[in-house]
Image 1 (cartoon, helix red, strand yellow):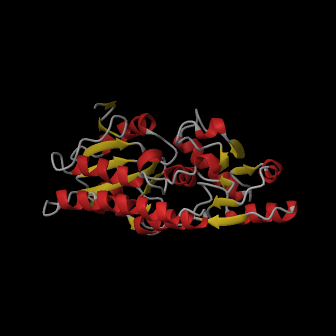
Image 2 (cartoon, rainbow, N blue to C red; image 1 turned 30 degrees about the vertical axis):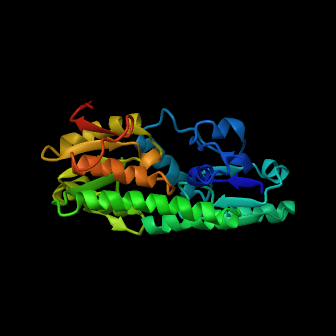
Length: 300
């Protein structure tokens, strides 16, 4: 089976299922595993936002939407030339990836008969279910069930370690300028790690908030997890946030690796959050996962 992934989380799922050799097309944002983008044909492009501030990126996204323009470009000819059997895409978030309707329209225009599977989870359980769905559609249902079983076992292990402990109030900030708070599966990660998510929207879209309201929510721990950034970028953005929450611990996390992409590594994110919220009850997170941040400076 020839597979094409139009979102980074689907690429991670494909490799986790042992189907990397069957993957022929990816997006310009697919960076896990690191070799994926270099070895596969890139069929979705987009603007390089490196060097732009969060406020500039937000303004760009809003202007594109106001003009009815897309954030991503589908290289339809390259996609058709790959002759895929199954294309993995989404309709969950126009900011995160190309909507499936654009893909289906392009395939119809080109006469390509590929199967299109839209992955649109809203909760952690639904994320795990999408792994099973991808496995079944790709002919490796047994491997997918085994993978999800192992991921659930790790979640159960975390739950056992944090059981009976006080649950810190946790604010997850998914964007800093303007601030957006946690939505979709992110509050589930906090709960699974032994915390209580505040100012959050479980199973729903992340929404814009105001900093005074977030301060008033009284978090014990603030986790800065800006979509599109790994740890260093998150830590840079977390420093000014720390000045607004002098009574809370402020942590930066590898957002793209552990929090915002709905794939297998969300369980890594739960384990990392558990280590932050309950030191000594959970294994130390790996290097590059989380970093405690002081006002104006990041410290390990």
